Length: 278
Image 1 (cartoon, rainbow, N blue to C red):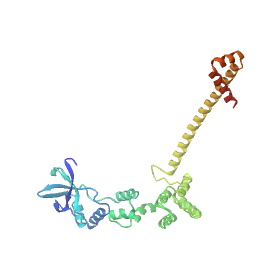
Image 2: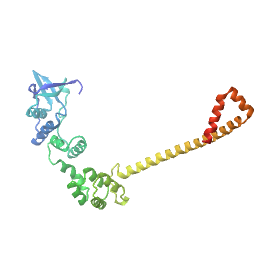
Image 3: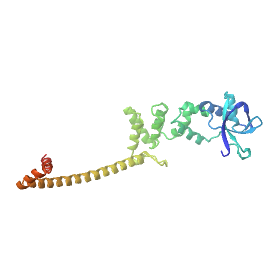
Image 4: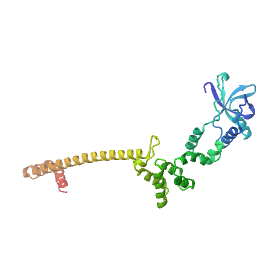
């Protein structure tokens, strides 16, 4: 916020400018969120007499008082009339909440997220959409904890009948790993695949990996051909050099001259000839 600074203020010096009415459920969620992960955004305040009025965050202030918090992080606005309220309204749509939960699961455990949102049955919320896309046998295995959420998502790439075939194969081999599911999904014929308008699917990834592998293989073959040709050329050049060196050393008059005046050259020529013989 322009023309503002961050400060820590004792709760005793704060008072709400206006108390926006919220439902008990909304307020309980605010309390649960602060209790689980702390205050996410500071309150917005403005100097007033010997304290500060809260321009935004009255419900968070109430929750922190209830939780016994003594000092609160705040943003001190310099221009009271420049602030527009309702910046931190604690309302999200079910779709936004679902996405937020799924995104957070990689970093925070389900219990903490459920507490922060003030909800119960987090697993059920996450399963609801997923279960609609699963064959009853697969859904039963998911509910029983035999397959993970990641494995269940793999099933959604194929049609129900193919899902049934895959879950039976898993039961037969007693292998419920995500890797095994993905392998069977990738091997699914095109007419049994489920097109849900997704940007990416397992087959795109497999095709891309195959293309990358073929590209690397082609590059390796080109390098092999280049170095093979280079090696052959070096071998031919070395053979020609050895023949020439031998012809010089077998010339008696030239050999005597080299022995007297250039023994180092004789040694080098003999080394070349020996390497070719080896």
